Length: 237
Image (cartoon, rainbow, N blue to C red; front, side, top):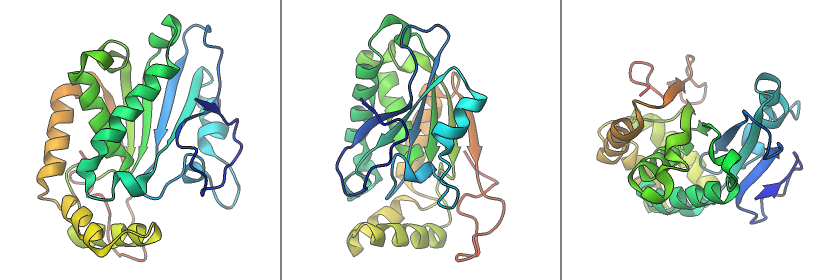
């Protein structure tokens, strides 16, 4: 675990993993753990920071509303995790669970509720982790039973308009130097009829839906450069 205290890092570094933005005494009672997961070409700090004001709402705003929260943010190599298809997030989801186990070692920490904040494809990473935690005894008691809530921001739960996601992912993939074939595979995995997304969503609901408080946020105005909505408001889950 790294305690960054809000100190920014150059994106070219490879300090991947779980970063603490707001630390709390591990012995303090009635604390909660908040974990943020970024999307394609994201960063554990920059994804959540206003480029104009410099305000990072994870470390600057969340504590104002949740003063009892320890706030952590994940940084992972999205270029690797999404380089073949969204199916390749299995390895990282397990890495995320192992990082959480290592960070929540004490009895007090293991009893804390876990709340997740996920941006776009980061929501798929979380879903895979939640499914794995539910199915694997190693993670079930210490983690899965402590998953209390998740907020999805623009996550394509059951696929989005192909033209929309093809444009969005094409821009993101070009930014991280993905190949044309990679672009096509990822766009295919995000179609409304994608069996992969349907499988992830169905497994997630079956294993975690009843116990998790879930909120999904999506845009209500069309994006100027696409003239469309990334997540269909008629089927946000």
